[in-house]
Every structure is written in C-alpha cells, then in structure tokens.
Amino acid sequence: MSASTIRETVLWIVGGHEESARIVEADLRQSGLELRVGWLADLDELGESLGRSLPELLLCFEFVPGELLRQSVELARRLAPGLPVLSLGPSPGAQATLEAMDLGATDRVSIDDDQALQHLERVVRRELPRGRAQRELLRLRPRLATFEAQHREQLLTGADAAIQARGGVVSLVNEAFAELLGHTDPGALLGKPLTDFVAPEQLPRVREELRQLARGQRAERPLDTQLLHASGAP
Image (cartoon, rainbow, N blue to C red; front, side, top):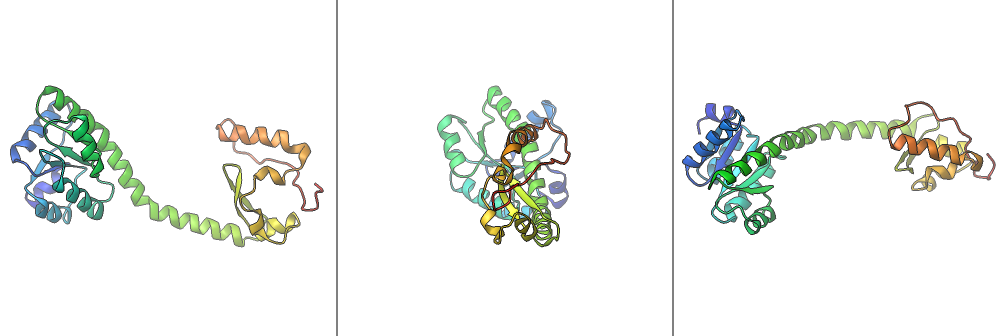
C-alpha cells in the first residue's frame, strides 16, 4: 500500500492474496460499513506500515493459525497497543478459532461463503468500537495515573482529616484522621472495614446509606455520623 492509501484505510489484511481484501471490502460496504480495506503481503510490510499509520482492525490470513498470526500479534502489541487482531482463513470452526485465540487473536473469521461473510461482518462491527475504546483507555491511562498520584499525595499530606475507602474497606488514610480518632499509626487502619470507625448506634443508618450509594440510589451529599475513638468512646 502507498502512504496515502494507508492513511485512508481502516482495516488491514496481512498475508494471503490481495483479492481477499477486495472481497472483504465489498462485503463490508454492502452491509453498510463504509471503510477501506488494505492488503499487506508480509510481516515486513506490516511493520513498515505500522510505523507510518494505524488501522482500526488487523486481519491475518493463514490456512491454519500459526507463525504469521503469532508474529502479527506481537508486532501489533509493540507498535499499536489496543489494536484488535483477527485470524482470517478457511474453516472458522471451533478448533481453528481456539488455536487462533491461543495465539492472541480475538476471533477467527472466513470469507468462504455467505454465512461466513455474515459472521465476518458481525465480528468487525463488534471489534471496531471495542478497539477504539481500548485505545482510548490506553491513551488516557497515563493521565489517570497522574491524577491518582496527585490525589493520593494531597490526601496523605493534607491538614484536614481524610480517609478513602474502596468496597467499604479503608485504602488511604492520613495522619490527621488517625490522630482525630486517637490512633498513632495511620497504616494500622488500612484494610479495615470503614464501619469499624462508626459509633455502634449509628451503624444501621450508615450501612443503609452505603448500600444505597453502591446501588446509585443515593444522591451525592455529606453523610453525618459519629466516629468511634480508639478508646471505644464515640
């Protein structure tokens, strides 16, 4: 493929014959998917092309899932993380599909007959949005990690008493909160149920509030309650 063609292409096929790309493109366009399908002869072309542009879906043609698929998956993981890879070839039966998935493909498809083409269309419709979502997640992951690190630092070093729980279990707590409840070591509070720090007479109401919050039935608002001091007094 030329550089200009690569930029316009959504789906690539590596291996087999160029006619396969024409068949796949014609079928997908007939089903309402307006996309272009490009053909790459081998792994060398695949590596060069991934260095210039990225498709949204990669198909690897082999009569039996094998070395070409394995290396294509490895290239995609290294150069295009999140790119879905499908195995393309005859007999998309259970055994061939399992072999393809063991090598890293998300599915096995074929263009042998009308039923196989219908299956191909449905798999492509499934994998395109899934791949886009995965790549977006990978793109945002560093930003999310930075945000979480900043949040953690602010919570742990803040002057105000603060605690964070996940699944009802304490995951972060600062010195101010520990001191408020009479504890000398904040680390000793980690991993304990949040309700361990609630006064006994308040527990039924707090538990119900937390259940509603977990189900999305409680509006975001402060939860007023009495906390339990290390001495056992509210």
